[in-house]
Image 1 (cartoon, one colour):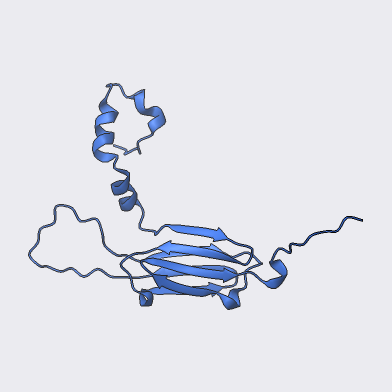
Image 2 (cartoon, rainbow, N blue to C red; image 1 turned 180 degrees about the horizontal axis):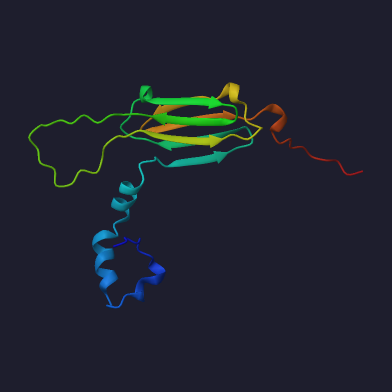
Length: 146
């Protein structure tokens, strides 16, 4: 038997009407399925005229848990946090959070100044500021019309 991910566009393709609706309501909890299928933290990447910003959501970790490195034009963020098996007499009916190892890698553009990258970890978010090289910054000025 092959498991197939639910496809909302083929929702009515079941031989039994309503069959998919029942399973979607029980198993289609996106929070649950997304967390189970992906142990890679989400990122936001933005850019200003001066620098690039990467924000990586990794709550529950400490700044010492992270390793941020650069090799050539590849920025790598990784961590390995081992969960402790506390046998405290509890029987869990559902246990969704644990910390595992992850690695995220980003190819930096040529305009990134890798010598001046700064990182900070606050409130569960790893913030990376990647300045742009001076020659890569957009120059803005008014042109006088003759």
